[in-house]
Length: 147
Length: 107
Image (tube, rainbow over all chains, first blue to last red; front, top):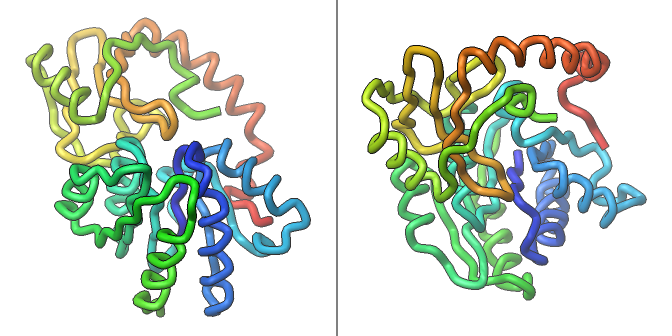
């Protein structure tokens, strides 16, 4: 499951589509829990549903109530809310959670809070240029091992 | 529509989650520390790093609530508002009943 919060940073939606593609190419079933604005942007970016075909989606708030069965959670984090949604999802789903903290600058406090809750955290300084995120996403996907 | 919108609430404070949790600890006595994902009032689940302080007073409840784009808030819902919200909520449930068949949608 991929977790997306506020879609304000320009790199977020392209990076999400990149990650979906990486995961689908490896044969994983992908779900996304995102806020409605992010879902709208994804649908607009991939209006022919080339990348997102077959991807399950739900509202980020609904996902806390309606738990589905997932092996892993990968969460994009760029603000305080992202940190706390990620921690909440990890607790509710009780599954391995990986987070990618990104932004113009890296807030070390976010990394500390996530790691204190047992969330493996990667970081990438990126806002407009997705390359640092792409490098980390490849690393994350290479390191995951789902059933 | 998120569940919190079904209630009439008062915003007491806005800030980071940590600041909101501290605000509750500093201003209320009757506090219970709950876990993330616990239901604080019907349909509203707590979001944040535990322990999440929730103040239960005689006729109201105060808790932190986080929105992905807008950050964290300290919300106060009085018993009076809670009860009057129930009719509003029932109406929303009726409208949303169609969507209940499939919680997760697929593109």
